Image (cartoon, rainbow, N blue to C red; front, top):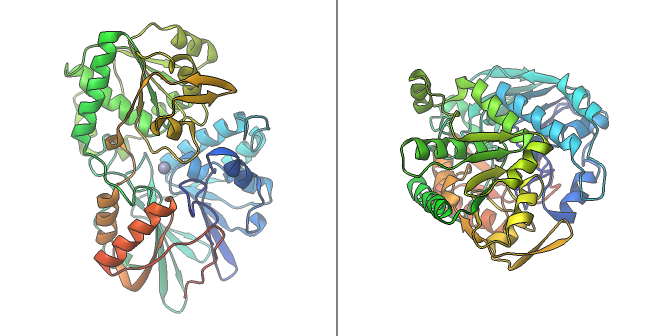
Length: 451
Ligand SMILES: [Zn+2]
């Protein structure tokens, strides 16, 4: 059953049943306005008490944010994931328990629900390894999206092996710090079904070098006019990649020295998790480590974890780069920085991630002349720059080459999810034309029999 991320990019959740057992693959939070609030609060379209286990593709909010709700509703099984995924998912769940589900409501769940989830966490043995969970064999492959991110292959014996691969979010080849998405698939990993994300199924990113140039221009401009550069970024993944890029630019002298502030306890904790899990690093990051230079340490860096430190960030006179969540400006400290600085033409806002429909980030991206932030109407005089080359999601070409490399059994079906409808349509057509693939575009709560 497709219980989330069908017709949008948030709320990922799949329910797979076989022989009286069932797995939930991801259980993420819906984001973006009142509709998302309603979807988060509605009952699950399956009985959580009957679920054998949860398996997480990665720790982002839209993939792991609702896991504690399952426990509140009777789920008593384990929650499996890559070790780094579990560390990140815990940060996300702790954060969700602190924040109101919507502006005037209580959090989606209490801190106690998060602690009960912590006791259920089980480390999957890792990439390329198999774990038996009830009648299912679950194998993880590096997805190259954020630390610990995985493609999840689930197989079961139904008078012969049947297998389905959940892509999770697919990363970008050449991203810093972490390894690239898996591109070598052996025939023994062939699958009957693929569930693929399609966030950027209808467009391509400019390359990373071009993205760096644009970012550099914005920073130089800020150094000259003394303005602030606000970078809304997912606390996990994007923040660390942006830090890495800034460190490289400042160290090499490509841009002048400028204070870099990460505002938010979640971003700071996530950066620590990134520092710890060196086993997930790519070759370049390992080489840098070997030279005694940690890829996530920089001189002009300052972190703000508590509210007092955050107020000091507000008092900073520019120029400064402020990185804060959330990535789509739908919550978090970035909203305050936007409220305080959007009216100022010296301010730059750099949108480095995908901006979902009905979010503040999308309004800025679409050129809104004024926006509402926490019941205040704010004129937008800041310069808004979208840089999609830093995306943590593969673009159309990346998705297609990922799909092309997969080992698929004859007649395999690909379900195109985790994209807005236009992206899904365009990408499904491409899969049919280029790979002669059988495709399906499921709607929310659709049930499909895999036979
Ligand atoms: Zn993600």
